[in-house]
Image (cartoon, rainbow, N blue to C red; front, top):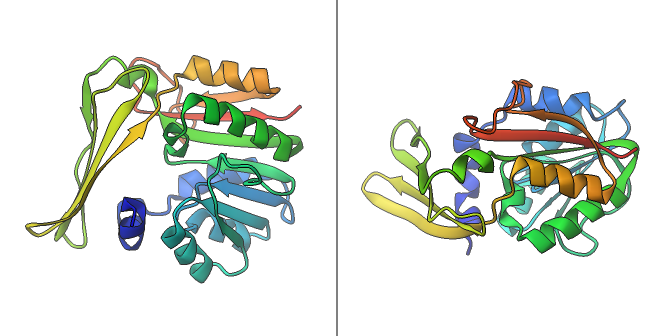
Length: 237
């Protein structure tokens, strides 16, 4: 069982639904009735809000437990347990496709390039593609980065995240959840850094038009040298 399956019941406590994120995404979704795809949907909370607002929604995620949780909570949406970079992962056409929460950093360069081509093909003309990752421009200046500890479950549990052995080729993502004195899980995953300029080049090569580059979902001005996050918006001309 993967860390994400074990983590599914705690996900909302650590990463709660954020109104400013949905407001940002909603801006690019077009009128109600259109199609939206969440690539890396987790437990599906943003899919659920789009459903409530009258959109046709699909969510995909590699973890079966996450998909089961999402499908149980939001039966009006279509959820599929598939690799986002796999053949056939993006079905139909959508006005908005988005991937948030640093999901894309799990894709090696070749698979990322393939996935961006699939996103372009699945977008309607004039449609928008929104991605959120960590700011690798800043992180690549470090050897290690430790996230602030998240205390959850009324103080009984703690969630730890750390990037170590940071390099331009790959970075080790160390994640741990403890409840009291017990370690529930402690896993490591490989992440694949992509800087902002490389993201822009890959998207332009795939045919996208760059619409906006921000530090967060409040549209703060992005600084490569200091910001921890990167939010990018591209459109299909």
